[in-house]
Image 1 (tube, rainbow, N blue to C red):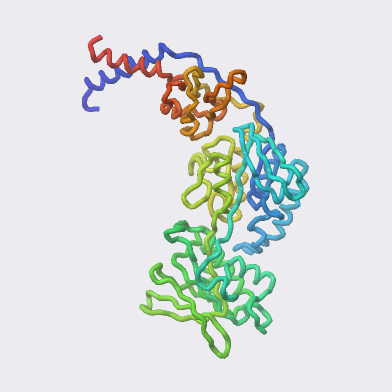
Image 2: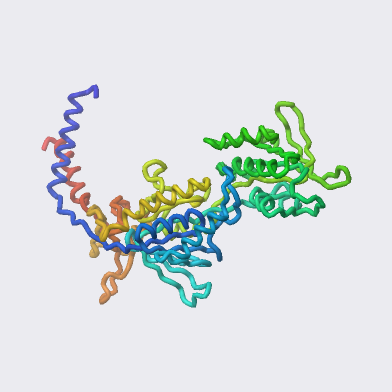
Length: 474
């Protein structure tokens, strides 16, 4: 900007190169592909069922695929929300809406064997099972990924070794059903008991660095439930950071007012648990370093509750490879852009919602499911979709069928196959609908057999030659 004469010469060079390239331009044809007006939702949890109902009520036939025997996912283990709303009634109504909807076809105990195709034209194969003698083939125009998540089962704090150590979901079920796992003569499961909750168990650490977001609210929710059922019960929450953001802060304040005691701890001095005996009964002695007091506190607990991480299901990686979509470092699906395309993948026609994306609250599941459906409908409402003309083109006479282009292509748009049945000629072939015109295959082709339309080798060389000719005085 401070060298106007040099900037003028650069501008002339750019125009000269553009004109030289434009001399070799050809008309780029736009291709049209038909759209199958059906959708596939993978996962039958809260977000999956919400998406299936929304898609069906938008007028499109919908396939809902669930790997378990029953619909509902992790929501089957949740009985109430922090706002005291009943969950199981809502779940039953949602399952009935899915089962009774004429446009929704449900496949339970179904494993996805293969997904092929592209936006508007996907083909999914479900493995045989659950009464299906043969694999089922589904054809659809879009995919909504709602594979959900799961409660991580910890390996520390005596979990699995002592019946008095449970997770927050297990405690919720105990409180709802009145079941008290350890043998105890008292009528109510928490009456007069001392409960210690430990936050961030095997979470926010090097091998699992993310925050599961819902754990703090889950602990406050169960603590309030205990205090409502038995005001004499003592509840301690050992935390690193309390993250009851937004209006959930009100419930944190309510818990403090009701007598729930919050004690912070540092990662360098995590709580420890040992077996102990007091007044002739077995307890779990929880010891935690209290920084304000500058010493350790020992709490004899009747029940220890662990707030564990939300983990992605193990099948995510395999599904990601089938759909050609990315996972983040934590194993959850990664959206195309956090702000501009929050429910899209870079692969067109594939969308995501719910725990498949990241840990979130119920209302966020529902909102994101509707957002994914809104995006999916932009594809399904069209009879055909237009494919850009700036795509790769293969000169079969030059192609050596080495397969390097197939290996390089991030969109799996190039495939080496027989292109002349009579002669059995092998060559690379570009799927026009999948190609994004990135040019990686053209740059990597050792035989010079691939050109990117609109940016062919001859056009690029003409632009470079015009620049060199100017500098040589021609």
